[in-house]
Amino acid sequence: MQSFEGILMIDKNSLRRIRFLVRQKLNEINNTKLLRDKNPVLVYQMGKVGSTSVYDALAESGLDALHIHGLSERMRSLIKTKEEVRVISLVREPVGRRISGFFQNLYMHTGRYFDPQQDDAAKLAEKFLSRSEMWQPPTWFEDEFEPALGLDIYGTSFACEQGYQ
Image 1 (cartoon, rainbow, N blue to C red):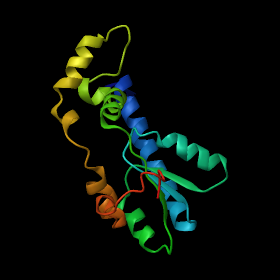
Image 2: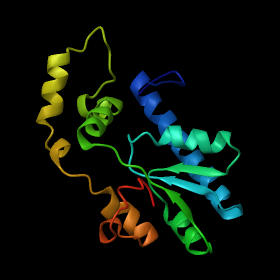
Image 3: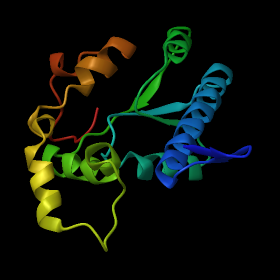
Image 4: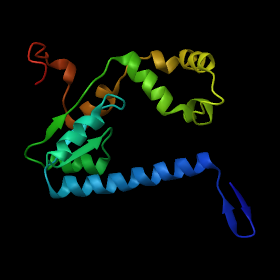
């Protein structure tokens, strides 16, 4: 960021980051209010699993729903006051999820946003493959879901023939 005679100049990448942070904070405020005042369906999962489609379908049907990847302490304490909590959580095969996340968050990996005029597919693939965290198993359910809701999804068998539970 630079300043010229009282004018603040912000580069495009910094402006994107500021917009993201402001939008994130506003979402948290709105989500907390909805959770406090109503009993919405929580579409609660790690990112890049197709949850926006599920959330949009719920919202279009008129259901109150929250689309979240993490719960703030305030939201966690509000959930504990609820008699019933309805949660939809999705998963996706890990390789496609990691690739999708890499490209969505390319700035964090390369220091700039995707530019089809500049970016070389082979170099991006090399960058992706060199990131050791891309090969770590996702631990979102242990790190986020279980502490927030007290549910150990690995401690319960899944009804594969039914496809949901």
